[in-house]
Image 1 (cartoon, each protein chain N blue to C red):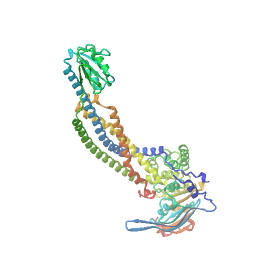
Image 2: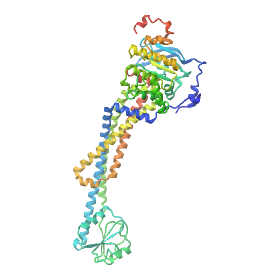
Image 3: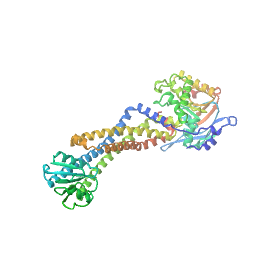
Image 4: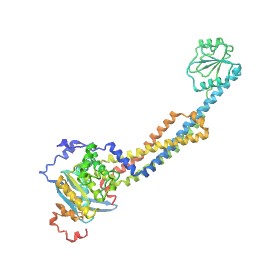
Amino acid sequence: MIDKARLAALFRAPAADSCPCVIRAVDVKKVYRMGGTETHALRGASLDVHRGEYLSLMGPSGSGKTTLFNAIGGLSKPTSGKVYIDQVDVAQLDQVELAWLRCRKIGYIFQSYHLIRVMTCLENVTLSMSFAGMESDEAREKGIFLLKLVGLGERVLHKPGELSGGQQQRVAIARALANSPDIVLADEPTANLDSVTGAEIIELLARLRDELGVTIITATHDLKMLKRSDRVCWMDDGRIEKIAPPSEINFQTDEFDEH
Amino acid sequence: MAASIQTQIRLPLAVAFKVVLQGFRVRFGRSIVTVLGVALGIAFLMSILTGQVIKEGVAGEQAQRNETTRMFNFLIAEAGLPRGIVLGIAELGPLSIVEQRLLDMIAAAQFQQMQRGGAAGAGATALLVIGDGTLTRTRMDVLVQDARHRLVFTTRTGQASVAPSEGKLVLLARALRADEVEKAAIEQRKTSFRNAWIVAIALFVTVIGITNSLLMSVTERFREIGTMKCLGALSRFVRQMFLIESALVGFVGALGGAVLGALFATAAYAVTYGGGLVRQSLDVPQLLLAFGLCVVVGTGLAIVAALYPARFASRMLPAHALRSDI
């Protein structure tokens, strides 16, 4: 099914010292064609993400955040330009290898949680473990561990519909961590939550970064989240305008007022 | 390091089944409607098949009854009234149903005397040769030797290769004439063609129904499918899940439909022909065969119906699937 040698060659243990970049995007462009009109969602974005970094993408809606986010996460292929994950060109990967990447390397967190509502919290967390071939007992144990880690040890067998938004997002975070990924991609994880719950989620993500060393990339409008991150990447009209630590960005300017 | 890379991505069948069954629980109402759709189509198929089995059974039963009566009447007409006949019966081998019934009829008719075995022929007015086998000339002569009238009835064409040296050989069996056989075959072809046409339409409608409801189900589950793909599910897993779902719907629907159709057809024909005749002539193995066929056809068609929706679902890009809720 998968050419083992090829995968092994592609993902040869990335030595942390030789390249600190876990993700590298080079001049990524994305054009959507709908009917006769072309929409340039990304007009050439380049970005290096360091291992263990907490990076926030921000910008007004339509600025290409989600498109860049999908490209980085291997969810869609850019029209041109390269995306390297662990020095592997994502465009080279076939469907099976992409699935492998999504299963093992990357954990996804979404604005509206995207939990599978017919499954319990534990089953949601263990599903990708079973895709990865983990034995069910082991997966169950790890799932319970992860749910405890995000503070939901008591809700293991509840269905997502029985939980609050914040709790559902915690389940989603536990699910993102299921296969111990290097990278967690969070698309506006606090947008559907009230500010207190949102702050808790932000703290949880920061804690996971500190404790587990995962690289976290979020697309967000949330000031609290921006301030908590290591670097902020400001996007506008399909381009990256500025990448800087939050201390160097003036959040009081007009462009932040609308959010 | 390379050795530690787990390259496998798989979907354990147990997990797939669990996901599908949970889906059924949540979407119980619509699943039931889909199952009913299959059940109706298959019930129709099963009622046609059951009807055929019953009709054939009843026709066979009636033909046997008629044949038995005809043979008996023929025998009386040749040999005389039962009270005056000493009937010697020579059994060559296993009896056919008609022969068995003929014997029963003879036993009920109170002949003057009935004798079997080696001395069947002693003092007999008439001899009846019966069963699967062939009489040798010598045995025929021994049988006939002590008989009063040398009158021998055979029930099958092959039983006596030659007539006895003295007396008369009468064949009770009657073969259908060629034109009769042909007429029956044409009638049979006409009926089965018409049935096949109606059944094909019914099943086609069923397939379209399943496809339609699965396509709806796919649209409804865009997000779920996208999520699974983000979690590393291969397109194949998504396809598998839809195929399993549809196969289960088809199987359950076909089971229900086959029972329903069999009951309905049996009841309908019991009213037409009378319950006793239907019960007596029912060919149970044939009926079970039809039942099995219905279950296989139902499940198979459900899988065929799911091919397009499953492909449609599995080809979806995760990014598109996730966006569909916004």
